[in-house]
Amino acid sequence: MSEGSVKTLARRAAELAGPVPCRGGDSWLWFAQNPDDLEEAKARCRRCPLRVPCLAGAAERREPCGVWGGEIFDQGAIVAVKRRRGRPHADRRAAARAG
Image (cartoon, rainbow, N blue to C red; front, side):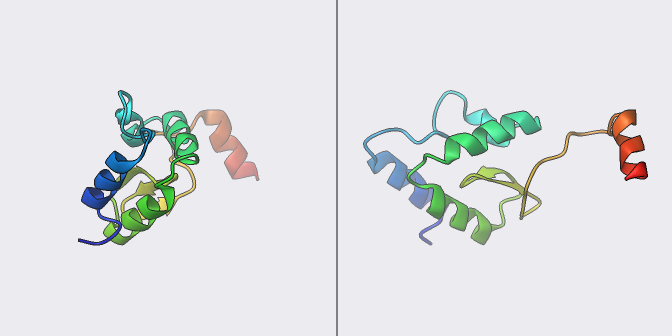
């Protein structure tokens, strides 16, 4: 079992004095569809003592989705931001064509 496996991370989280941010009543936040919720999860990860091994393990496993180690994974790759589903608003489409 690698150092970044989910099982290893869960064991290390249980050994910590306090809880890690992703193991609470709002754990859904790390797999939300709303980009604002994902940004909130990323912000909470910043103060997690397991952030570095969590990110390394997720990259090694090529996690298909979710926030891991303070980064958003989409189809196994880290993305800066998750776009909202559907077509962009008409004003944004016009601005993208103009600029």
